[in-house]
Length: 68
Image (cartoon, rainbow, N blue to C red; front, side):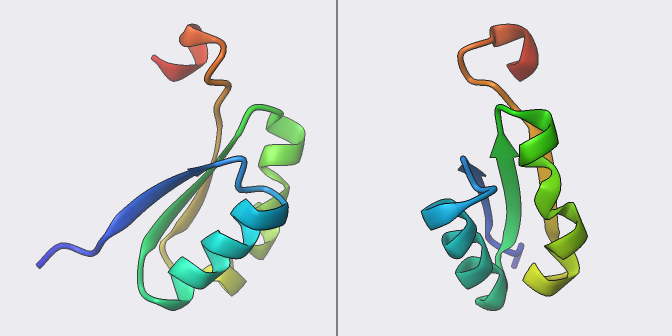
């Protein structure tokens, strides 16, 4: 069975960050997405603490070019 996967927008801080940590602890593969690349990728240094399958992506859902 494949591991569950979730994409969390706005996951670099606050509720999104807490949710990412909780899901990683539960064995989920977590992708943290944020529209501000510098801020959104800040958690990369903490990703090992989140779990072995956590990633951070720069993503601005208002800019279709960043989604494609």
